[in-house]
Structure formats: C-alpha cells, structure tokens
Amino acid sequence: MPIKLILLDADDTLWHNMRHFEAAEQAFADMIAPFAEAGIARSTLAAMEERNLELYGYGAKSFTLSMIEAAVELGGDALPVGGIRQILEAGRALLSHPVELLEGVGDTIEALAGLGDLVLLTKGELLHQEAKLAASGLGSSFASVEIVSDKRADTFRSLIARSGVEPHQAIMAGDSLRSDIVPALQAGAWAAFVPQALAWTHEQAAEPVDHDRYRRLQSLADLPALIEEIG
Ligand SMILES: [Mg+2]
Image (tube, rainbow, N blue to C red):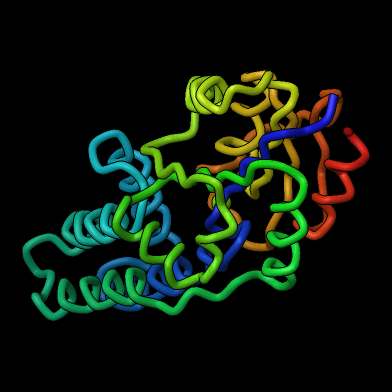
C-alpha cells in the first residue's frame, strides 16, 4: 500500500543545527577554561543538559540555562559575571543564526510534496522552530507543522491517526535514531534514517537494522525514490 503521509524532522534533516550548538559549546569551554579543562567542561554541560531536559525541554534557551548552571557548578563563586555574559551571547547566537538548508533540500521537498501529505515534525521551542521554518522558505510546502515537546511512539500514533491514514501508509525521515526512527517504527510507520556528521549523544539509539520498515539513506534526496519503491 502506498505511502500517503510523509513526516520530516527539521533540525539537521532540513537545515544545519548541530554545528551551531557545537559553536556554543566551544564558546562555553573557552569561557570556563580557567576553572575546568575542556573535557570536564563538556561532560559537565552534557550531564546538566540531560538532567534539565525534563524541566526545560529541548532547544536553545534550555541549552543556555544548562550552560549557565554548568558554569556555576564549575566556577563556583569565583565565576565572573563576564562569563555569564559570554554564555548569554552564545545563547543569543544560537537563537538568531541564519537558517542554512542542507544541500539539495529545496528540490527534495518539492519532489516529496508531489508524493503525499508533507508534515514537518520537530521538537524544541515553539517560537524558535517557527522562526527557523519561516526563514527556511519551506513553510508553504508542508500540509501541516507539528512542533512538539518530545517525539515518542504516542506522538506518532496520534499524529498518524489524526491524519486519517494507516500507520504503514506513513513514513518518518530524520537524523535521530532515538527521536525520529525508533518511535516511528514502534507506531507502525516506516522510518528512514538520514545520518549527519554531527550527532548529539542524547539522540543515539541502537540502529534497528533488521526491521522490515527501516531504511538507512545516504541523503534526504534518496527519500522520494524510497517512497516510490514502497508504493
Ligand atoms: Mg534532527
């Protein structure tokens, strides 16, 4: 049965994202260098982020708070206010960088829009994700846009049900095994993993290589052919 619903991740699937977090993390490590060596700085920040997800959710603002908390933990009362200012600047840069589409994404989106209902499914902060979508120029290609606090199997189940298709008529494509691939398969949909060079440890999961609805693609540009093959 052909695919009718095409769900796409946004960050690092349509446009660059991780490279900006990487730059912010480097700025954090440089700022905190008088108090901690880079490895400790990064692992403290990663642990802080993981701990804060439940309270703050995903996204740049939550990441900025985690940088401040990690700096306070590492620097203690000796932390200069200038350090906090540098973190806030890095956080602002994360929220305001220009949106750069991954190579070929514009043409791929056009091809996909002719194959089924195209839905953007992204987690993170509503305001920031909306701003990036607007800046991307891709908004009009999507039948709908879903900005959610997290992507779990139930997120996919309810979205697919609301779309009025059967789970096996839906496919999710994205760069995160944990958020895009595993829960989509659990919900009964197809899943296409498009790995990127920079990946956040938090988003890793075992690759479901033997699953019959799982495919690993070199590029999002391979998705239209996969959808036609499934159909
Ligand atoms: Mg992503």
